[in-house]
Length: 253
View 1 (tube, rainbow, N blue to C red):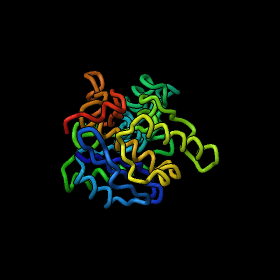
View 2: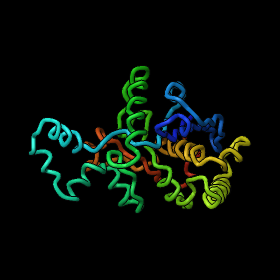
View 3: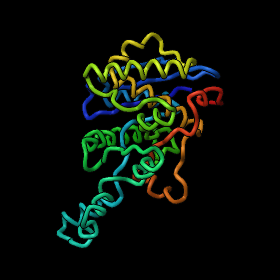
View 4: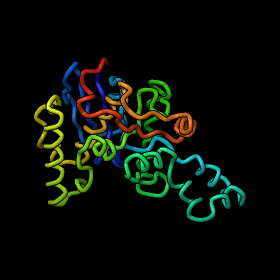
């Protein structure tokens, strides 16, 4: 089995991918790249059993009628979101609230924060994938799952804060985080790419996304239950691992 992890940014320059090849009791990093365009992502998707993408795959359900109402001077759907609580429904998806409840982390808003631009690119990539491989359900039940590396790391007991950025302290935290990952997952062969991973949080997050894609592929993530299923199909669903790192190996697939 191969899993693809994508750390998606608005620009190709900050977009990273990582492909892991899974054996019975091990995994090997077989492809690692930065400055990745849409076409490369779509091509690698075709050869992967599961892709984990670190980017929202949809928007809050409430956002479309709100914007349509505003466009058409229809006050009803706009005034339904008067006040801070109403605006939160426009800013955050059902899955975002679920992740916060489970992990304490607050995902960035896809509609009201800097994730909006990458999410537009993600929608285009999903359309390109659909043209070649068929539409992928946004709840992750197909071959594309939304992932959140910071949440995966936290659930695996790894320090998930303060490693993003170009400062000295961020670089030190990333190096420690990478070393801890290697200690806790000795079965993971990084193929001599440790230096590149320690120098780029984008590449590192792509590896974490690929690890989480493995969890999704072997059904070791938290799926949407009946209360969340409908929203997950339209808004997307962040797949949180329900296993330890060691639980990723020794699985069929």
